[in-house]
Structures are given as structure tokens and as C-alpha cells.
Image (cartoon, rainbow, N blue to C red; front, side):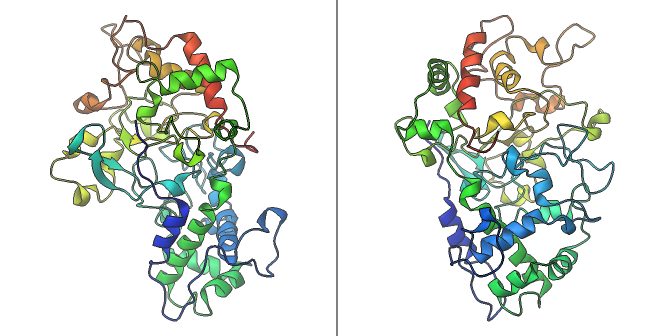
Length: 419
């Protein structure tokens, strides 16, 4: 399957330059030489704009009450995802006790390559078939990384700020406010709305740096001819690209004939309904009538929805994550229902051949398959593509040895410094 077209960070920054700015405010440049602002060792290569973004990203004063930063849920050592020391592994703890998200925190790594949210033709199904693609978060509710920060900053279950103006006031009082003034000019805080936009732009500039997309895994070295895969890793790669076995490229895209790591983003940025088991540990799931329907609940979706795409057909679909650094990002799926990487791979292989392994049993003795969806939307779950095209009792496309080999290969996708 060919990789979906995505924007490189440099292209996204060109888009960023077209965003509104206050009159007579200098336009920041992504690669301008560092100034004399004090820098830690890992900040010396950052421009002032990127440095400002890093300061914002790590500021625990930007939550209400204080104590939570962007980095609290996007831990650099865990591929820029995490849960803010939550007692519930699957979901993050907010800035206030007892406040939890309802989805696993997605990684920010390699997300600067994601196109803006929209609908495009399905390259496998023809021009008449449209599919959702791009955006940020599991449901694409932020069009891009510039729009993304406003979500967690204002979400009551996350950083809990009452307004964008409140965030701007905190930035204005921060020790790094002089960097904001140096980058955007003396009127950087004059218009609160424009100032908040500058905060978002600065965060994006940092998240578009190489540390969020280093392409520094063993697999990248293998592509460059600088490393060899072990026999089990090589077998896992062969299964990964085999359309009749793992078929992982169908969603976790790459170009088998390319040695360029940027051709192996390992996501096509589309949306798929996998029917992950319900996670009873998520507080919102205590109500049996509460369901997270993913893409079809995306704010503003109906206005962007093509007439040929029924809204109901998108219920249960979540954005396909990159598999880069997947080994350090447990638990798995949008709801963190699967604890280990091996079980996540085994789920793909045996979800349909042995559903009792993954789902609770009904009084009838049958498995309550796809139990995290209302009955009306279970038909949206992908049951046609390999390896899902199996029935209970049939031989799975992948056996235990295959699962082990795939896990070994997936472990080669971890960037240096993430363990």
C-alpha cells in the first residue's frame, strides 16, 4: 500500500507563516540563530521561537491549579506520551484530583507530518470512495499542531484553564516572557487573542523540531544500511509487509522499495474501527450506556462531512497511530485496553478466530464481541482486511511464532534515548 501524502515539518511551517499575526509584529523564523537567552545543553540548537515553545511545553504553571505541564502527559522518555502519574494506566490524571481523561494520551512524535484534517479519496477503493485523514488527537478534532494546544489547555479534565486569556496572563508573568517579546515584538501581549495564537505557534515550532521526529531507531539505521536486523526481526518485517499475513502496511504505511526513513512514517493518518475491548478501568465507562464513538463525535465534523459519507459510518473509528516507538507506549489502543505489545499484536491475529480471549462472555455463552460499541455501530468494525478476515475456529493468519517475530520487529522502531 502506498504511503499517504503527508506534510513535512518544513511545509507545515510555511503554512504557519500564513497564520494571523498582530500588525507590525516581526515574523519569527524557525531556524534563526539562537540568541543570548540562557540555554541548557539540549537547547543550544534551538532558535528563540523553538526555545519559547519548549519553555511553554514544560511550564507547570500553565494549568489551573498549577502543577501540570504539556510534558506531564507527553513525557520525552515515553515517546512524548504518558499519563501524568495517573493511578489508571490507560488515561491521564488532570490538574485536579479525581479528574481523568477518557482516552489514552497520543504521542506527539512524528505528528508534524500529519496533514490537516479532511476527506480525500481512498487510494485503494477508487475516486468514489472518500475517507477521513489527518488532524490531531484520536478523533482529529484539531486540524493541525497549531490548533492542538487549545484542547488540553482549556479542558476541565486536563489543564483546566477557564479561557485563552487566562493562559496568556500566565505566560505574560512567566520568566520566559522576554523570549516571547523578543520573538514577536513589544506588542506580543497587546491583543490576548493574537497572543494565544502566538503561544500555539511557538508550541508548534518546538514540536516540529528534530527531537519529535529524529528517525533514530535501529530500523532507520537498517534502512540507511548502517545496521542489520536479526533473523527474528527480519522475519517480523517480512510478515509486516506481507499483504496475506500481517498486512500491517494497509494502515501503518511505508514504502517497501524505499530506504528513506521519511517514507516509513508507519501510519497513513486515516481512521479505522478495530473494535477494541471496553476498558472498565476508565471512570467514564462506569456508565454502561456511555460509549466513546471516536470520529463521528468529532466537533464540527458534520460541516466538513462529504454528502457521500454517512456520519454513522464513522462511529467507532479512531486515528491510526504511528508505530514508531510503539514498544515504549503501553498500554495500547485509544482506550488503553491492552496492556502489553505482544497482546496488542495477538489481538490483531486472534480477535476474530478466538474472540473469547478478548471479550467478556454473555449469558448465552457467546463472546460480547466489540463490546465497546453500541450494537448499531458494530457493523463498522473492520472485518474484511487481512488479518481480520477470519471466523471463530479458523486458523489465524498469524501464529504465536509470527506474533513473536512481529514484536521483535516492532522493537526496532524505538528511537535512541527512549528506553
